[in-house]
Image (tube, rainbow, N blue to C red; front, side, top):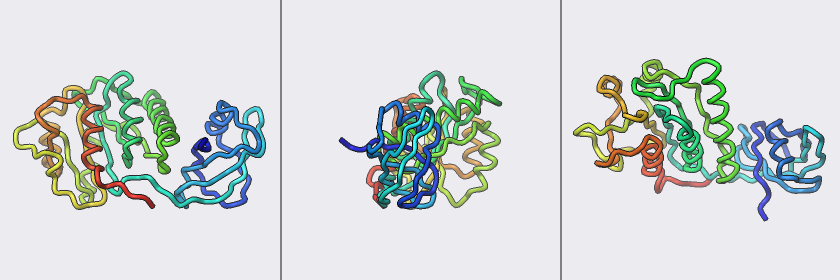
Length: 248
């Protein structure tokens, strides 16, 4: 049986004894691991890859482990795809974050657009983002990803676009049903990283699409069918990462 994968977002060293963060400690306790049991730590921002580790002590609220060998393995796509999305309502955003993480998304930017059903701000938005970040961590623990994609704070579409437009070095495309949008698989993309943005239920307004075009974003299409936001996001990720998987 494979050792459980536990997220530990700090730099580690062989032989080091560390206390796991609260969420990781709770996870280990739920798994009913005992001293001497093996686990795998991932999320090291300095070394990447994975660390072999062994549980050394189980407290009521804390778990201590000894760090062992570092394994320099990565399971991320060779192309980093940064996703911005008009948040779908209900539980669909949870599902989108989970599955996008499994597909290897590089980052997720939740947006509030003109047609958004889900509108978040303030403390409620912060709590949702923290929840989605935890969903991404759990997805990495399950799928083998060693780099958890950041879920950025919720942004209003206009504010986000004004900042995103300044990053001209990173190619950007938006999903559109408008005539003239080229198929996504025909997007001439040689870059190792790119950005894709899509609207919520109902899509972007004409004004939002015009603003994206004016900022240099390319309109692309996934075909004649109208896909739900979460389906479209995952389809776009799959198209852009197929054949672009590599290991470090």
